[in-house]
Image (cartoon, rainbow, N blue to C red; front, top):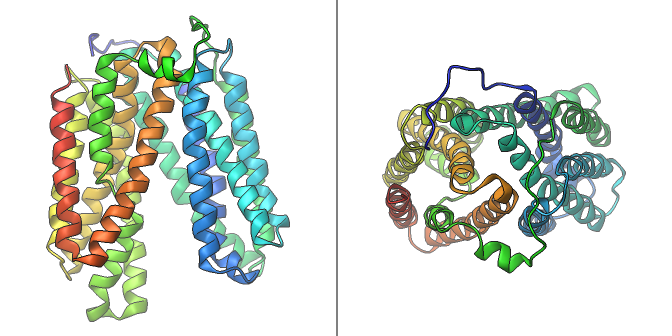
Length: 396
């Protein structure tokens, strides 16, 4: 980061608009996600379909982010792409209310995640285009904070609506249209489109090759870290298994969910605090590497196989802190490593690398846990986390 933070205000309508949009959109689709497994049971669909639904949707979203990033830098206006993506996600999620067969859910969820993939690079590029570079950390931190608040509020709202409607899942799915479409409207009305230098029409591969060398080194660090960054839903399974001998299965499951709520609260707070801190340091890479270091500590604690509630609480707390910081700082560092006219490609590539890492790491850790033990599984994660931190620190 070459500039020093200025005294002028960094918070503007675009940053607020992107944050509010993220909150409302996450509120919408997380409400649907929370009740989706139970809804599948109601319509007589087994767990294999849930895996297929999520796997197909996630894979499609990851590929779309890369492709959307490429075209985002070539088109004159980015804002219509993002608004279109948010609208498609809202309508596709609301369509769950009319589902009667599993294949219809596959189509609906895939369309919803296609919308997420389309909008993501454009949203982030528009955010950086209207944010001074010395405030990238705070801007992305605030966006992640509001996104996480929506992720917490969505499931809570879904459970409340189920009680109010007599467990009418279809009414809850229809309700998700309200925050989802308001999210698209907020983006349309609040986010400003700043003119950018249009990139020459080139192929996707050439666009990838033209990304700065420093950015590609950054991606290597993110990729190595991501190879060990298992899904944090595994933490719920871990806590449930560790607490069951003393508390029983049902009580252990409730405690694990409570711990995960704590995790999300600390993740939300960490997003903004770490982003703010990074804006006041000579280089943002130090805060990102620090979050990777917290991940190393978390993985080492997981290797202990503790059955005590207090150490488990510390694990979830640390996991929330590093998760929030990582998400905000990876975007902020990516924006600092690439010129603004390449931000769409940069954010799309970063999302694709993270998606591959998420898929590979969860498979790796889950397989090692099943084949060996928690010490082996999370020990490998700790080694990858440490390697990723070193690579980030070595960035120029």
